[in-house]
Amino acid sequence: GKGGMVMVPPSPGGDTRMCLLLLLVMCGAVQGFLSPLPSLRPQARLAVADLRPPPSRPGLLSLHASSPFLPTEMDEGTNTDPDHPILKNPLTLTDRFTQEKVTVYNHGACVTSYKTPEYDVFFIRPDAVLDGSKPISGGVPFCFPQFGPGEIQQHGFARNVNWTCADWREEAAGGSRGFSFTRDTARAVYELYDTKYTYDMWPNKFLSRYSVDLSAGMLTLDFRVKNLGTRAFDFTGALHTYYAVRDIDTIEIRGDFKGKKYLDKVSGETKTEERETLTVQEFTDSVYYGMDGDVELIDGERSVLISPVNGWKDLVIWNPYGEEKMGYKNFVCIENACVEPQAVKGGEWWDSAVEIRPYCNDAPAFLEAMEEEG
Image 1 (cartoon, rainbow, N blue to C red):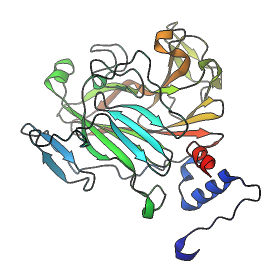
Image 2: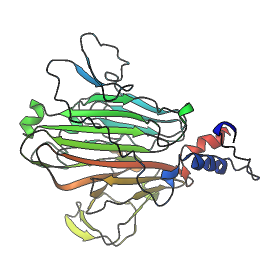
Image 3: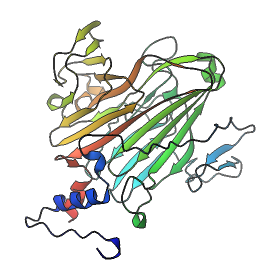
Image 4: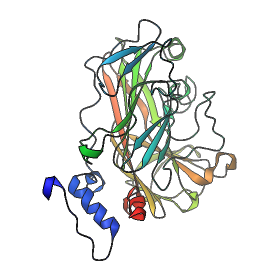
């Protein structure tokens, strides 16, 4: 078309969704929703050649969005703007084209919300507190360096301390840049260094970096940890993700479950899964080993595709069925995890990523609002 524009003729049947899908496919925007599902996450990570050490004096260190690899010091005594993304808590990421929003708290670097125009993908329990006095019960609590009970506090300390927002881009760059995965995403990057508090529990020097990216109907959660010491350490961990559902009794969880070994933590027995599709109609706490493929949560016409890209090797399904105070009826935890210790040598990285894509009526969820407006 003239000026590089792509003209889509009206559908004879007036099917607005089909026109929108055709336009987006031609622009390369929904390629990631088509089968098969290779990772479309940008392969170039947010990588500074050699990560900086913690600041030598009190203050905040920022990687500014307009120059994401240029560190600039921001003194706490002079930078007191509560709307500055480093100090703003919570921080909201927005994709203006798809009308999606993601909310992240400094406490635990916890993603508490991923809102499509129609509904929230994540769930916050009614007994949750957001004042920083305890880990946030809902959204995506971060379990590190320990998953479950063990030598240190339940699920580790990462979900119970404040992380630093080190890089951000509150809105995806759209408009004249076009609508494709090559554009800049809405992004927040949180970092956590070892402190006396963490070292007393887990005597290792480390840097954890957690990147939250929102782009065209997909949320990517990218976690990396670097061993800043000289001796190796190991850890276990998980994204303890709470997915919102309308009725736990009617959902399905589809994936490559049949034949997988799993630990039924309710009975304490290791079993072999005989089902291809899981349902939840009783108290459930199951750890599936070697479950590193795609999983789909089905909730009527809504669905969520959960794709571990690398790192996470296991999957946990949890629901406290019957616990009214927790709001059991309206969520299921589908947790990408590593339940066996992961070794990281001195000076090396361990990294992982999960891609989350919400759908409605077999189309990207954000298209529903566009169809209604059309």
